[in-house]
Image 1 (tube, rainbow, N blue to C red):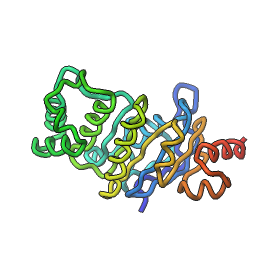
Image 2: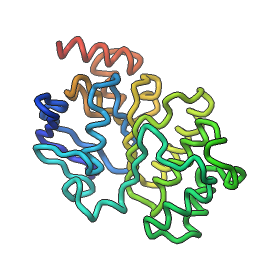
Image 3: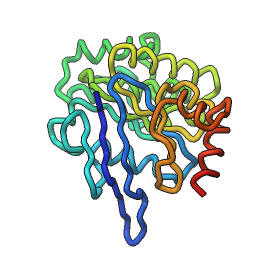
Amino acid sequence: MNAIKAQKLTVQRAKSEVLHNLDMTIQSGTITGLIGPSGSGKTTLMRAIVGVQKYKGELSVLDSPAGSASLRPRIGYVTQSPAVYDDLTVRQNIHYFARVAGVALREADAVITAVQLEDRQSQLVRSLSGGQRARVSLAVALLGNPDMLVLDEPTVGLDPILRNELWDQFAELARQGKTLVVSSHVMDEAERCSELALIRDGRLLWNDSRQKLLEKTKTGSVGDAFIAMIGGAA
């Protein structure tokens, strides 16, 4: 079942076309890595998926047009910069966003446990490490138990141990049946995804499983496969 389907998806800003006629699908219950260098159009595509970016063409998300009001409680979105308040504690942040979303406070406390921040819930966000701040943002996205999570470079700037911990959490969420779209420009993170969408200069180079990509390019890593795909598209 498709969680996302795009046909001739195009985004234009001023006189420049950022995304060029993308045709793609993302399956439900998977972790799909949106992989490409900085400036390739990953964030623009994610903004279109969550409904905050105007576009041309067709874009269906969870069987509704992207941006539909009915999708708002069904999608959790984590931007590149943590969208939480430094001068509030972890618990105060989560409770604030729960009230905005109309979510019961007991559920807010449950997401703190889900991201393993129980022992930090009384701590000001400004005093947390980068990985802990990323978890607070993830907790906010989990409020309301959304069907889909769209995570824009959620592990950028984190050390390898913290990155591993967050990816373990992503895998657990996928096992629970959630659809995750995770962007990254770090190729080794693509190895953690069963499905991949490779994007460069606003064009889609690949949209299928990681295993099929390696088989097609006769390579042993996504990084080498990406280079091979660039060569084929040149």
